[in-house]
Image 1 (cartoon, rainbow, N blue to C red):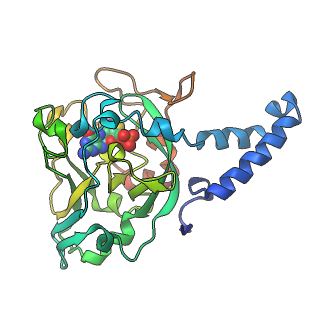
Image 2 (image 1 turned 135 degrees about the horizontal axis):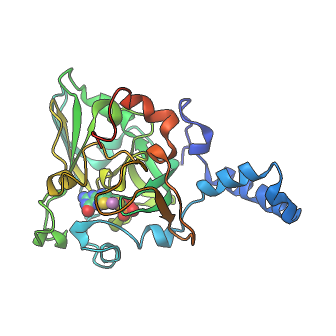
Amino acid sequence: MLIKKPADIPPSEITSPALYARRREFLKSAAALGAAAIWSPLEPLRAADDDLKPTPYKDITAYNNFVELGPGKTAPAQYGGNLRAKPWTVAVEGHCEKPGQFGLEDFLKPHQPEERIYRLRCVETWSMVVPWLGVPLNQILPRFKPTSDAKYVEFTTLLDPARMPGQKTRLLDWPYVEGLRMDEAMHPLTLLATGLYGKELPDQNGAPLRLVVPWKYGFKSIKSIVKIRFADKQPRTTWNLEAPDEYGFYANVNPAVDHPRWSQKRERRIGDFFKRDTVLFNGYGDQVAGLYAGMDLRKQF
Ligand SMILES: Nc1nc2c(c(=O)[nH]1)N[C@H]1C(S)=C(S)[C@@H](COP(=O)(O)O)O[C@H]1N2
Ligand SMILES: [Mo]
């Protein structure tokens, strides 16, 4: 596996497994110095490390939202479909000079998935830390030569009730669709994920290809993508169509904007006992706040 470090991403966001293990070793020996270490100058280091400590694989793959595979958090893992059935094709359409249909391998070529450890904050107030394998979307999109009319990117999930039993229900309007503004899609943090913990994506996490936008609520990270369309207008998005006053197009993690049915100020990291404060832009503000300069994030939520 190739580990790349784009210059514009702080090293804390990209941790190779080896480096991660070494850091934990260091912290263990620091802890062995005794309880006093808890209040020593090492404390900020310990806290930062904990903030990106990956959630166990079994939790990331057993507690999911993927309505196509069933309602609730455990159904997707239990009633996974047959998503990885090959071949998988990705269609690229809309305002671009080189549209087409691509087999998954060709679509990703020549890029090698790299590991990125990202916090994931879901709108239901739970969070995880996931070691994704993926290719930054901004390495892939330019190949299709989007035109100046391409202001947004729309993503569509597979529509196939035989492989996605939830699509036999009317829980949502199928297929699931999502969208990003072009500058959000081209931001170096935005990832097309193909795996986690160094392995292929399990069906319930969105096999074989899903979006990861770490500063936005989980529902923006659309799973099992079969189509990418360059659009001149803001695309419709599934949860916004479903409940426009609860789920906006932007969906930036924002502790100051309550969901109409619950506060968004706190979150429970899966595996933790205590809740923690939710951070604006899920902690990625240094890198993404500039995308929203001049916007009222309470109105454009
Ligand atoms: N196609 C599709 N993508 C989806 C969803 C879905 O129901 N269908 N759920 C979303 C929501 S609400 C969340 S929180 C994340 C959860 O991703 P995870 O199961 O990998 O943690 O997937 C998102 N992507
Ligand atoms: Mo979610």
